Length: 467
Image (cartoon, rainbow, N blue to C red; front, side, top):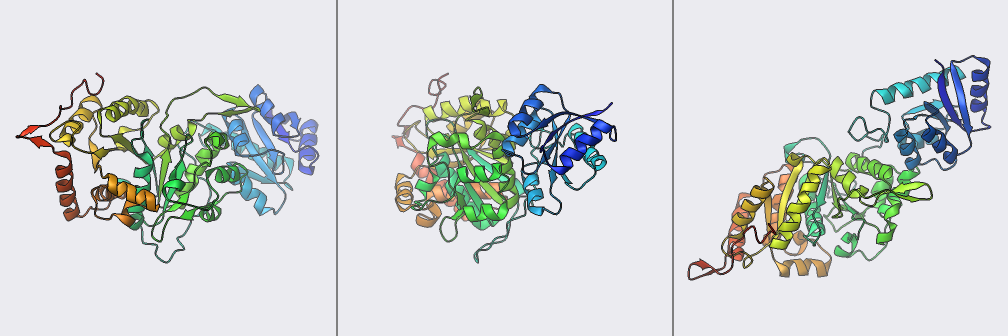
């Protein structure tokens, strides 16, 4: 059976030679259509007429999203570059095209590349749009080496996984449980333990990491990185220069969207490639994502499909570790228990989730709040909290007003020690025993409110959580 191919690069020498060879019968293939741009190519892919596309590197509107949509339509892709053009070849590979041929190749050689691309798709390695492998494809980006004089060596990986870069996603339900606070302080605490750490603001509903850290100058952020990655122009060194150092010993920061209505800049295929670039380029990447996990309907705009919540969902699905943040009051726990079920629905492995109970304080439940919260989470979700973060409004206000992390302004405070313990859990380093003892004593003092030996308030019941 003849191979059904489509070409994109009308008028280029290799394309004309290939079409002529197919007409003469010199190769066992047939050209079903010759396309001028990405729009024509996407239409052919949607029709299902072709098996493989041979695409010129200079085709109009060729970007990461186009490659993903072609792959999702079941079309294998071979990129063709001018002879000796290393820049064009690197760009195609960064777009996710694995099979690249030289423009001076004979038609027979181009057909061999086409058959190899089809075989790769059948084996489950067809590129960014191929969902059959179930795993993210690693981009061929170089590793970023720390350039700061104060960079420290790498420690163990998440939960003791040595020698492996990790993507850590911080998520929490609606109701301001403290996702950004946890993400920022986790990144600062992980920095001395893991070496270079990247903090990414990926909340498409209203990121605030830049404001939290007091960045006064504009820096290239997530929207810029997404546009560069979509064009195949973003690699690890460029990503490094697009980030901003948060303080002398802090993490690198990739700022979020300046306005919430710019969420359409982050397309699913581009975001997945960014996640892989983050993982390859930094020892630990901490991603602060939005609250919503709903799988909303596709929004069609100018023939491009968008999903606002795809950023959060893809990040959680690709994460090596998920930090799930719950607020320690009845309303916060109710929202967390409801939303935690959705984590499982989108395929997040519960073994890769660590629960952080934030803003722990006395007076809400009476008596010892931590055991009651632990019992409720075990009863309704079957999970055990990893860290309880005590409520310290003074320390949080001080850090926020100075645009710094707790480690920089209130080291030794209850919340800072809790975040230090969480970083040790994430990185796999042992926490200091004296700090753990001080943390337990401090939490016990703050959360216990007694009157004549009896709790001064109601204990937690199913009624508190809405059941």
